[in-house]
Amino acid sequence: MLQPLAGFVVDRYGGRGVLLGGVALMSLGTAVMSLAHGPGVLLLGASVSGLGNSVFHPADFSILNGRVSPPRLGHAFGAHGVAGSLGFAIAPVFSATLASLLGWHTALLAGAGVACGIFLLLLFNMNQFAVLREKQVEAKKTPFMDDARVLLSGRVLACFLFFALHAAALTGLMSFGVAAMNDEFGVAATLASSAVTAYMVGSAGGMLLGGFVASRASRPDFVAAAGMVISACVMLSVAAGAIAPAALPLALAGAGIAVGLTYPSRDLIVRAATPPGATGRVYGFVYSGLDVGSFATPVFYGWLMDHSLPHGVFYAIFGFTLLATFTVLQLPGRTRTAAAT
Image (cartoon, rainbow, N blue to C red; front, top):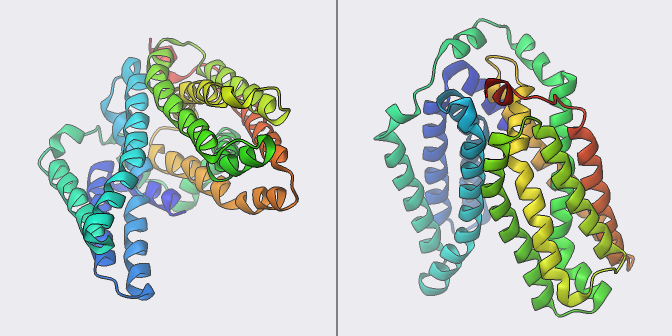
């Protein structure tokens, strides 16, 4: 939830130093957690690590928008998303393997070591992240309240809602999808888990392909809307029982590809809605919508499962995805990247 504040810092002082500080804090926080023998130290380390994590979206996107030429931004955003997905996929295997062999303290210490290695890699390659500074100078000259008003524009709020609604849908699938499919179709947990995994793998592949699509599309808003509609239709079909249980992994893989295709276009749309000098705070604010959507909906999905409404989970996922589609259609049709090409 500190991403918006981190965005203000990025706009005023630049993304390079903030990114480096964020990685250092994550390494430090994880190392502190590795020393924990009680909840107090564990909470302290997690807080420090979370503070470091808050800078990544605003700093990353500030650097990407400042360093990458507009015709290549779609590819850059796609690669950025795929790298994040790979990290999320590898981390549980890495930590669980070490924890089972050497204990969870050692697993956390190894994680801190990885973060420290990334810190050193960034430190010795800082020149690669140099960006033009005139936008940061412009941001420094504006009062804080004027900076904050940027986040209340209709276009930025629509981007925030898109992220929040998409996160609400994704939370339902990732946290409750397996249980819902098990209750609704009576399928084994392994098959349901495979379907959710297929969605994530499809999403990663879609992001990679989406970079090429976004770089060539003159209307990224149409690309984003089309991908969300396809995913919504799949979720509606699952909710209605129109898909055979054995076909669930294939269907959800298709939905994941469709959603993944939207991610680079979505980031280009955010760029088009961002005034000069406000990249950090706008990206930080709209990406905090992911946190809001993820935090606000688990109780609702849990209520559906407690009342024996597993199909309602997928109807809700369908509804949130469809609402996200409407928000993206309210955003600028032609991005600055499209205009530049």
